[in-house]
Length: 356
Ligand code: PHE
Image 1 (tube, rainbow, N blue to C red):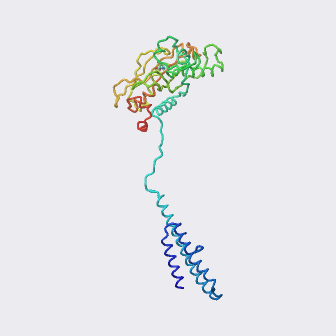
Image 2 (image 1 turned 45 degrees about the horizontal axis):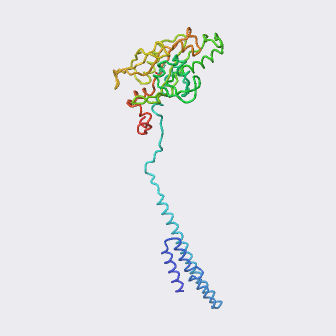
Image 3 (image 1 turned 90 degrees about the horizontal axis):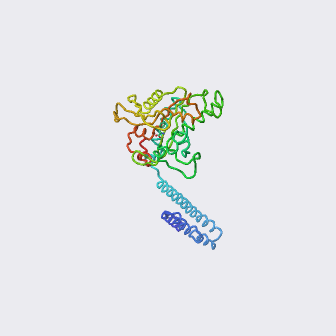
């Protein structure tokens, strides 16, 4: 019995010393393995009598069970310790502030575009989109700017390879081609309902007024603090039977006051020249208070649509009259937010952009 107790105790001690599962399996082999101490004792019983075998066998079995129990306990203890270590290693501090997922936002110029669309939309203007690669016809000729007209070189046009007078051959230098594109579609739609429309001839029947804005990207060979080779414009066109400069002044004043959230703002028309409008005017605004107070700021070109342009829309200039304007959303954005370098808008610096 004593020898067995000693074996059980030394097994317990060996198991306690094992600190990895492999250690423990090695320790187990010393006692329960093929030539382990218990196994050797079993083998040693061969010489005993049947009765002796019974009693000796029973005590050896008790010792074996004690060793197995110690082994199971130690296995469990090691597994628990491993689990605890793993949990500690993977611990999350749930009290740490969360990592923010980077949230994007609209570009300041996009915010301005949306604002322009919403304001003119509320005044009954449609919003139209057009191609950025244009043909001479829409960008110049149809807008009363024939070939060799100085305005063509004034625009510093980017030309693209291929193309022709009517096939796209340049990057549009302004959004004014949309005047023609939109008006032609509009006239087509209503002249086919034929109340005075002669098919090929100029339309002089009844139609709803043309009221549209066309925002988008425009291009010119130009680059400094206030000019970017890619910039934005928003065209406006209002054509009907009785539309005048006073309507333009009313609409544009209303737009500017809403856009800048200030009734403290006045407008002036300064005589100018554009081939596609006659008379033409620059629109300047002046804030009566705030950081920009007192300075005249140019925000748009405008004018009464030239009869030749009305004709190119398919309309009879004896009957239809209207005005057009083209404004710079980039400049409006600079004025609204107090930004003084246009290039900041196109550098893509998140530190700048995330302020809007
Ligand atoms: N297209 C002109 C420009 O780019 C602006 C303009 C539009 C002027 C419509 C008059 C009427 O400068």
